[in-house]
Image 1 (cartoon, rainbow, N blue to C red):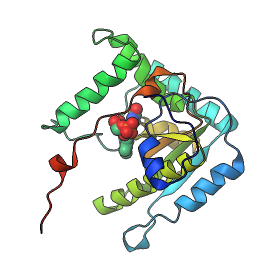
Image 2 (image 1 turned 60 degrees about the horizontal axis):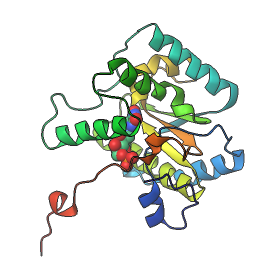
Image 3 (image 1 turned 135 degrees about the vertical axis):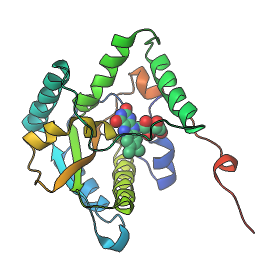
Image 4 (image 1 turned 180 degrees about the horizontal axis):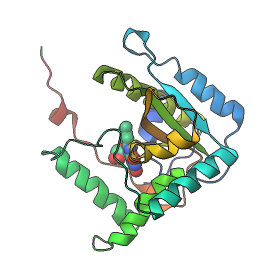
Length: 229
Ligand SMILES: Cc1cc2nc3c(=O)[nH]c(=O)nc-3n(C[C@H](O)[C@H](O)[C@H](O)COP(=O)(O)O)c2cc1C
């Protein structure tokens, strides 16, 4: 499916046309558009109205430096301990298979075979460049947050993602930034009591890049919901 770059006229359209965009054009996002998205996203609900999020929004030179620092550290092979692991380990079925299929479907789109480990690693490293997006966001939260507050963070992410579609923009939520939190800690103004929870790329999606043709599978409603009458 080709990337839809129209402005979404409805929430339904925004949900249906949102994908995790993994290649962006370098077209800048106008400040007023970015501010509109972020200001509106702050209307997201949170348990007890805690609003447990802090946003670090990067563009321009700061973003360039941030990406360069991350790439430098990746090249140096400096693995860090993630603030949180991405998934439970070991992962069970059917989630294990769903995760595996997502990866295989993505690499098939861009023609990187299973035995091309270096190719796959290089592609993964695109995370560290915010997939070339002109806006990179790091979301931090207090280390004392409890699990319910992570739900709030997810709601904020979804708000940004849907509002971005309304502006004709695309996004990529990136847990990956938890793996390289030293970059955020060293270059952003993050107090000691906070940690990196998630990141996000935002910009105009590149409809020419095959990776953006991926429209990830979903399980059916009957697999995931039980109805009680
Ligand atoms: C909280 C969160 C973190 C994610 N982290 C990453 C990431 O670090 N890198 C990446 O390429 N995709 C990441 N994804 C994208 C998921 O892989 C994607 O949402 C899922 O495969 C469904 O595909 P879709 O978003 O294109 O519909 C993340 C998604 C969420 C919701």
